[in-house]
Length: 277
Image (cartoon, rainbow, N blue to C red; front, side, top):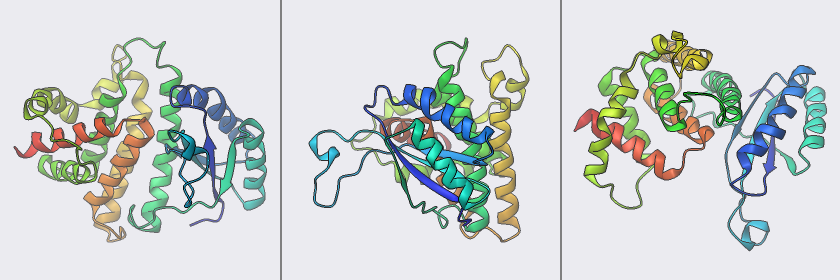
């Protein structure tokens, strides 16, 4: 991995305001650093504060608070250090730490580089989406949008209906329900989910009256990533199975959207049963 990737752990006060703070403080700070030429790419994952090994610390005093992991890449180490200083001025509760990319999960160094590109594009679009969530008319809800984007990714990677079902089954294995999902609940969602998994998003994105018209570039990013992943797999460059990598991309996308574990579980299990039952 390039040494110019760095990580900031950004702590927030509470779960109710974390997205508002991200939109009003984190997003503008990253934009300022980008416009200044200090960073070339950035993305985030949503996490909670971790307990110290001895059980002490802020999180030990109550429910863990949100702590997003913000990764930034600059042209060189000196520039990244300058970017970190700028971001810390905007986000005083940010702690620089070592970034350890999940290279194996995303298929090796080349697959990780491709993942970083999609992470950056998706993170930008998500913060833009959140910024207009309460004001834009006909805004597609995040669960539906996440399913549309992931399905677009899978199809672009050349996955047929049953191969997509295998991917959803892999995701479901990572998101096991605490309690058994009621069959009637799962089956009731099948028609709507089938629509999300099969609709022509490219056509909808071209329709100015569609709630997806503003997401054309977003869908293109997932489409490009799927196409490139399929190419890497075909050329023998990808160091992990294509469907395993695609499943990991979906899990990370769900995280960036802020979908609850219960929502992720329901979506993945329902999609898998829709295909195979």
